[in-house]
Amino acid sequence: MTEFDPGKRAQITERLKEARKLAGLSQGQVAKMLGLHRPSISEMENGNRRISAEELLRLAELFDVSISWLLGETAETLDVEEPRLELAARELSKLKPDDLGRLLKLLAAMRSNSPANGGNR
Image 1 (spheres, helix red, strand yellow):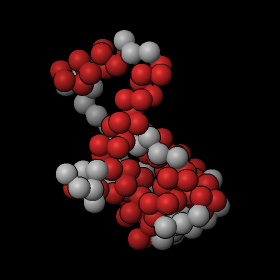
Image 2 (image 1 turned 90 degrees about the horizontal axis):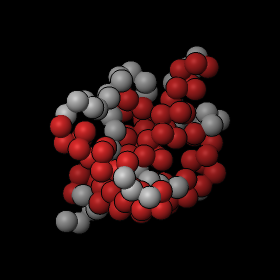
Image 3 (image 1 turned 90 degrees about the vertical axis):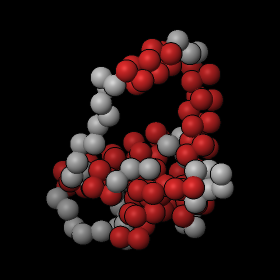
Image 4 (image 1 turned 30 degrees about the vertical axis):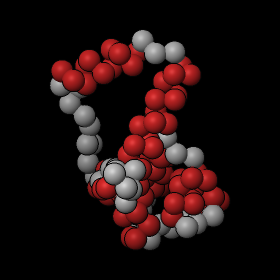
């Protein structure tokens, strides 16, 4: 990864953590999927390890985000005014915390099994 100023580096590391968590994956799972050791993922997320262009591409694909979002170049926010998202948000807010956790794991599994992410469907 190119040398970035500390503020930019912090933004990238936060986005890496956020994307991984939103994907419902642990550092160990990500490491296994990328063929790395878990400490490598921790070092990436803490800004203590350079990330190659290939790794950045693979992380973006794994987390289903764009490279430009990981680099903090785009906001890429969802349109929260979309009726389907509003409905989903209302329904999700009714779930118990354990059920919400199970649903997020299911969504992550569905995304990892999609053809776009190299899964079989």
